[in-house]
Length: 554
Image (tube, rainbow, N blue to C red):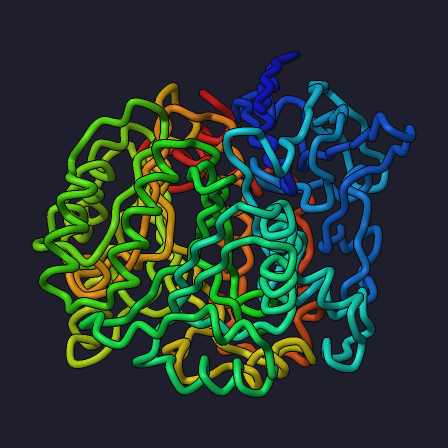
């Protein structure tokens, strides 16, 4: 949901996903200086119980509180946000809120609201009907995790920690499986299939008369998958089909639900069924309830279960989902391997069509097809969230390319910086495995084109935006067009990840290795005059100018 409002020179746009509420606002430099605006405060009223609170930040005015305790939030009403963008990560899905954004003028310790805008926001439900979207907390939540669970690793805390990290992701898959009744069918394909909880739910489904069959990778992740099935001593092994001849990685993660044998729904996304995939990496899952989409996935699954080699698989997968193509609904599936790079070129063409904003994740470097999309200076803001700048023999060249792109004023790149700031980070390093290709943070794969526009495009699924994911691996993607509710959820989650990893990367740039993340985030104080709103926010073409305009809906 989106809501806009303006009053006394202040303009505000609110964007509500299911677990994130984002805000962007705008105010002229003249008004900021005239009213001596030292920042902006946000008050949230939760209508379900009347709870009222001011959102908090970690920086303070030194003249008011010089040495705040590390990691202890301070009310934005007294210590306002000196930026034009903020987010609330503590909202609940399908809930009603009233937010007040206030421009706070005057002097530190004696601020008053010189302009206010109130917005009614209802967060999106996890399950929207046709679409259901899940994001775990995972590694992105290490800061809050450390405080909530007293900086103890999840294994020590117990189930409460795992439930919190999952944030409904694993529970959503459990519910998807548990709906199946006698005579129904569940057909799945998974790269890493090593979760005892999911084993149990699938076996329970079999025992109540559901036809269950799972294709799993038996090449690069084969040893892990076979060992997990053996150690679980589950009868589910009788319902598994090893995929041995994919030619690349059998990298899918999807499950088709077919009531009485007729495909109706599909669960898909980036999540491997491992401890790391569910609780560690940043991951997502997406349910589509559409008979045509589910039927295509079922045909694709029937192809995978035959375990033919890459060429015949690619021939059939390309014929099943030709691209570029229009969909009779808002959602079009795209399957790999493919005979050529047509799908990847299409994604790059969609990205190049962005008129205001482009947001994209890259796990292992930026593919050459997307370099010219990002390597341009114009009025389109472009965000790239990367696990690393590059890999393999081309890492030096790829790193140089990313460095060049970073210099574009309208492009912002964040690269995951692996630092151990708390017990969760150490736990994440310990549970990482070689099959994850050394991914520690960013495992989601999605592309957002003009998410705040009238025709937003979301491309999401299991495939990294790479040549191998297109022509070699078993992969699946969804292209969702024109669905603002879906786009709002993905945009909020993208910016949640981006903000966190931009901070982590800033530690590397500054050469900082703090004792913990809270201490690092508390460094510095607020500016005590209007110079915080400097020319970078008001010079056309600059990153902060474009972000101010875009996120405020101007």
